[in-house]
Length: 263
Image (cartoon, rainbow, N blue to C red):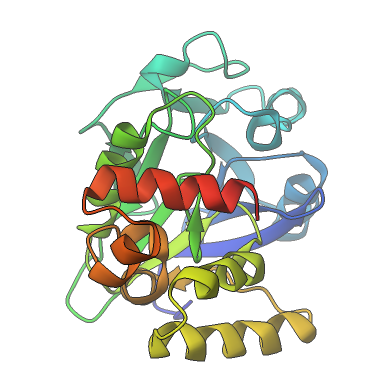
């Protein structure tokens, strides 16, 4: 974070490998939280900041993304709970039902809502474009796109997931990817099994291995790096199509996802 930025993004660890993201408006001293897996890490930082929680931004209904909602609402009864319109009835205390093209405003920035079904049928992502040239955008993508990977298909189809990931990879390279799990090292280990000659991938794997050996987080990643190294954004590449014996992009993706499920 640069000091000039109004919206500070604070990464919190939760459960075994989850990340929660606290967005802090440093001007008004208010906060929003993305996918609170549990409440206590959020409450701890809010107490330290003496900040008021005004919004919960959920990407989907899974318990490890909404598990803290009820407790946070008890502490901050006037908080507004956001989620996808298709998740109606599945996100605790949801009040705002978002769809493709909806917007959410916080800390002088406006998030664009992107409908990204695949992991679940109702998954959404929040994208904060950069405010001016030279700044980075911020993508909160839950379990759709991971650093080096993507989410399992629990409720969606390969076609849906390819369409969703295609939306995300169309965003600018200088976009920080704030995904909800620390899966990067395992994802890159798998990627090397089907894209071994990718020098960008080799370099990234060694960097991530060093980071993790030092206990450092690998999130956020940059979307430009994902486009070069993440096999789940590279279904059109001949090397990956050859690795799974398919020339069809959706089938290529589906076969790679199937292999990862067993990895």
